[in-house]
Amino acid sequence: MNKQDTGYIYAQYRDKVFGFVRSKVFRSEDVEDLVQEVFLKVYANLDRYDEVKASLSTWIYTITRNTVYDYLKAKRDRPVFELLDNTEDATDEAPDEELLRNETLEELACALEKLPQEQRDIIILLYYKNLERKYVAEMLGMTYGQLRYLHDKALRRLGELLRIK
Image 1 (cartoon, rainbow, N blue to C red):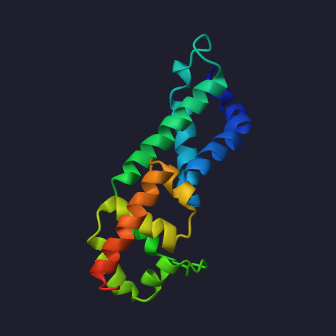
Image 2: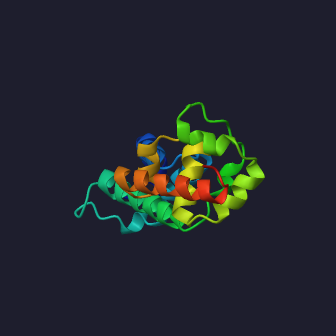
């Protein structure tokens, strides 16, 4: 494989790479950045590709998977407060959401800061970004059961912090 094949590689694999990245990352800006990063890595390492060791698609998939997992791992270590931008009201009417609707954003933000990072991320992703629990669990690298447990624990703690009974 040589550098002249980059147009072919992009045309053949762009949609597949995009699909995989999109299945793991929810922000479209991040998806585009990661797809670009994958192809930059592919092009930069094209001279290292060995068709005897793996097919081109396997090699590109491996680069894609590693890039996405590195991103998710780094994201797990960062606060998710940037997700508070462009918030929308939750449409579900579950009883536990009353806790989140009754307080002002400022009061809630102060209470959220007191939660452990993982619990804070769960609340923000579920209620402010309206993401499904299964998707949030996958995104945060935990089982659905772990997510439910931490979600319940976070809601109880927020209730204490906001003095809601």
